Image (cartoon, rainbow, N blue to C red; front, side, top):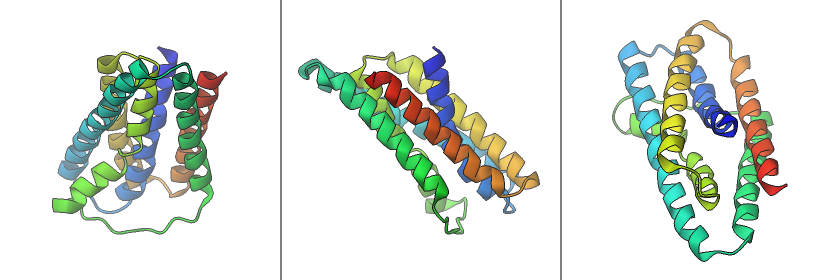
Length: 175
């Protein structure tokens, strides 16, 4: 259960860091609410699909499935850690129309391989995806609200923390 909470937090911190930056722009609370709901829904759909695919794959795979899942988590976490040090280029998104859906999808797409690796380890799909969706929705809302009041420095650290958690969980699955 602790691993699931940490993984949910790690996935949600990505949405938090992006919404923190978006929150520094003048975004109406209506769009903050809708964006949190959409990101939460995508954080249910993407890892859910990944978990179902991972479960199907693990039934036909051998003992290396757990190793592959751990390696995927570690790789995703390492990417997030290194990306947190890269120079970010700010893009201006409009939180309406296609920009709204692209924003929600872009912060949720990384949850697919996490779901896939959990599917390889035969985790409970419903509990996992609901946890991912709830944490990401709440952290998105929190990021927007804090973004209205805080500086840009916190965004990099939350991405670094999320990547570190994914790396630790990946290493835990491998060893």
